[in-house]
Amino acid sequence: MSTVSDSFSLEHPDNKGFSESNKLRRLLPQSIEFSQVQRAFIKEWRHRDKKKPTTKTIFKILAPAEHLESFNMYRGEVALQRSFNFFSSNKANEKLLFHGTNRMCTLGEDRGKAFLCDLLFCSLCSIIQNSFDIGKCGTKHSFRRFGTGIYTTTCSSKADGYSTNGDETCQFKAILVNRVVVGNPHKLQINATPLTKPPKGRHSVVGRPGKSLAYEETVVYTNDAIRPAYLVIYGDIISQTRTRVLKKKSLRPQSEIDSSCSQTNALMEKPAKKNNKLSKKPSHWSSFMEDPYSPRTN
Ligand SMILES: [Zn+2]
Image (tube, rainbow, N blue to C red; front, top):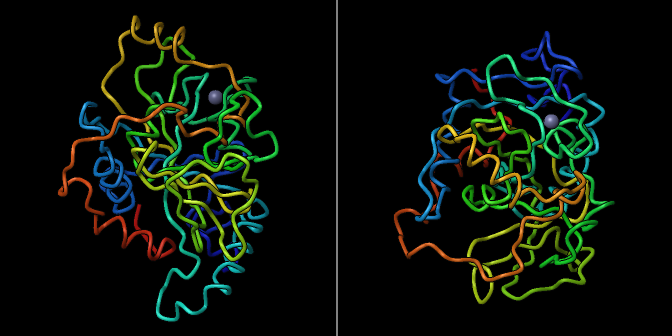
């Protein structure tokens, strides 16, 4: 697919008026695209001890054509390797997966705040601006359950655990939804910390809930396998006191690269109680992922 036909490209006809310095396009709440992202975000909120949040705003993350080129090329290569999957419209097995990171600014807090900051430790703005960078993965966190890779998850409430605010005036939280080329995943239930690439013939590692992992996580080992796609601003208004506590206790100074890597806990995660209804894959989300480039109305 050419980058011009990629709906996330700044060159796409729908994205006129946006630029590298203005690359967040706010989705209208009544749009199909907004509904698809929002419903997935809420459906995949699986921690029953966390209240389901309100979605405030969703931005589509646009990128210059050259930033999407290597991603689209990689996806094409993976699709070719999976050509046995003849009837699938999503041969590369691309999925939309969540990633939580730290935000040092007030990006997305109100409708007018859609410009990225240049604060040194604002991983959120760095990822939106430059995408993920595996090169500096693990600079702050020594534990990497499935090795040196970029971690995402299908579980929004798990990614929420990694979403932190550094600015005391923030009232909400922010999470990234990403396009991830999963390809042929290697599924693991045990830790594999030395990994720097997936096993031969595989394109990613998917950690399955089991002995030490309560919620799925997906790891890719090349920058070309992932691009940020949406920014979701969510939650109930956070009190100033709570924000300050969060800053003291939860905000771990980290480079944007480190946050790209880490989306995994060293300790056993607390699983949600078994609930088949909640854990069932939402049909609307899977269909969205099956054809992520179908025309959508904003
Ligand atoms: Zn920022």
